[in-house]
Length: 210
Image 1 (tube, rainbow, N blue to C red):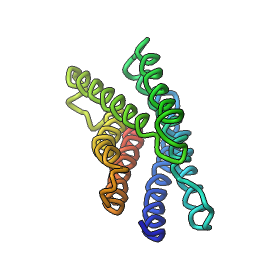
Image 2 (image 1 turned 90 degrees about the vertical axis):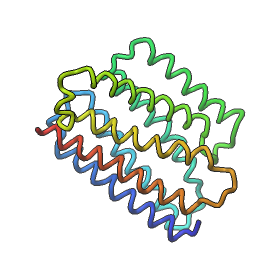
Image 3 (image 1 turned 30 degrees about the vertical axis):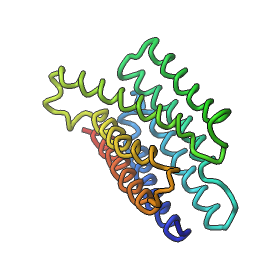
């Protein structure tokens, strides 16, 4: 994949991430005392992480973006686990889930792959866990009266974004490394999935003001 295309992809992702950060800041007073507060620091970190990678690549610094993404995958999962625990009341299940995820990540780190490669097993376990949590949330929501006005529920939009992202991201992750020559298709798909994810976040922040 050529560097120009990679950088243009990164700029587009940074733009939507920054827009999500702005929305998080603008509507902060509406959700600061709810579990959604975790998304503001997560989004700031996400944007800074992507910006740092893009700057390094633009300056010609020899880095492996995957190292940054591996650290990000762990931190973002911990944030998501905290949030899902608050809205789903996971109780002891959160510890079981945490052990599973950390074990998968440790496998990638020590046995499966080099640090400069994506933590594939860890990311797959993360995707399965978040997809499972999303299904649980929606199944519970269907049994509540407020489902009639689902578009007014901030959590609905956040989980819709996560569900859509991981449904699309998981098959892409599974075929990476198979030498199928899908680099450009992969990058375009990730762009679209990020636009949907952060677009749903922005909508969710907006709904907190209603």
